Image (cartoon, rainbow, N blue to C red):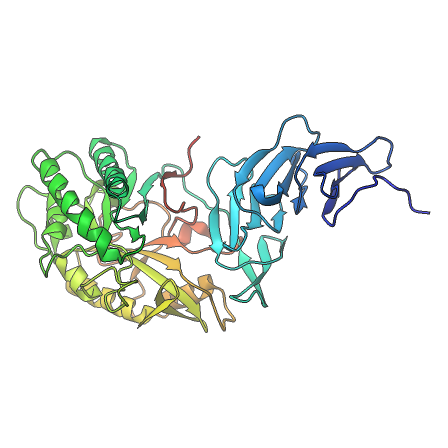
Length: 450
């Protein structure tokens, strides 16, 4: 006859270290010795899906409260890791991988010291093995997917400060003021900072109940006015400033103002980097950029730019934000679910042609996977590598993971900021600067700081 260990049990349980950890019906999370030598002990009053990876903690879905962890011996109360949770797995790389309700596949550092980040927009059940997550994905959760989950990495000395607080309500002055303050604070921080920190400052915002130009229309003028006060007494640099609609009725004064911050005399928009000394790091330069750079022909709800990519580069933009849907082992450009009727070849052709004509310039390109993949036999990383390997210019890309100087190392080349995931065995030193730990709608530092 089977031995009863406890009169209550739900469908979620795990065994580790001589104990069974289990959902005791509606009573919460319990543990009991495997041999039944002691009565079960309650660890938390809530329980759902759970994992016990052997690091001294139980990670569990605390009912509708989200993702929590609690010491296996119950010596302390449970602490929250994320407000969402469903299926979850922990396999020894210091992260919890979990279904964040209907938001998709996420991961969060086991100790909760940094916010969770999204890995895929769709996720049902999931398992892990040898550095890969295998999960029920696709828009209908009816397909099997896998994702290489190399942990985010940064070489010694790399430090990024990023402001991307994008939820902005154009109706509320307080929301606009909050966004402008976030921009201004990072401009001030960059101006006063003398380290090699690379500052990325997004002036863009996803408006609530209006189109992106409604945010830019209320933000860009204030940014331009504040920039004039900074330019009157130039100090250091301002970082990389990433904008929606930086042109105003065909004028590019805001772009001009940012790249001219690098000089006491006016610079040419096509060749402004040429006069900057080779020993300057990209983090030591004020660089204008665009957010969702290829949305110039998009619908009003997705459109973030008026200028084409060619026009942006000619106007002095040197940071571009490229969002790629992984579609039948090619990259199509998207803004969310909207296809922009352009592909990655267009981006590469445009950049290659510009750099051939302006050999002392460089382009910083953020590449991010966007929307649901479909019809693929290769990983996103493998397809990206094919684009790099097959390019007519074998030296088009700078793929180092450190911040380069503006020397022959990067002049005439594209510098990769990588926002897509790579396989655990990939050489992270040759896959660009890793920004896969990006935290949405926050100002944050990478690598994360205590």
